[in-house]
Amino acid sequence: MNVFVEKFADLKILRYSVPEFEGLTLNEKLYIYYLSQAALCGRDILWDQNNRYNLRVRAVLEQILKTYSGSHTDSNYKKF
Image 1: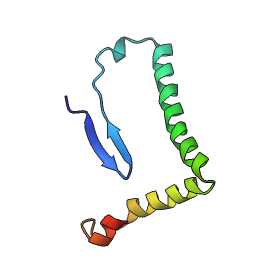
Image 2: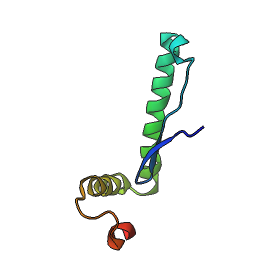
Image 3: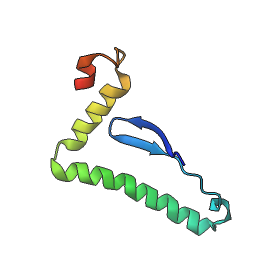
C-alpha cells in the first residue's frame, strides 16, 4: 500500500484510507482532530526548543521555497 502523497521541504503529506472513520462517534472524530492539531504544535515546539529564532528562520525558509520562481533543478537551488 502506497500512502506517500507529496513532499515539501522536510514535510511529507501522507494519506491513509480509513474505511471505519465514518462509523466513529462525533467525540471520537473530535479526539482525532485534536490529536492531529497537537502533533502540528509539537513540531513547532521542537523547532523552538533548539534555538529561540528557529521558528522565524523556518518561516523565512518555507516562504522562500514556496515563492521561488527560478529553476528547481539548478545546483544552487538544490544546495539551498
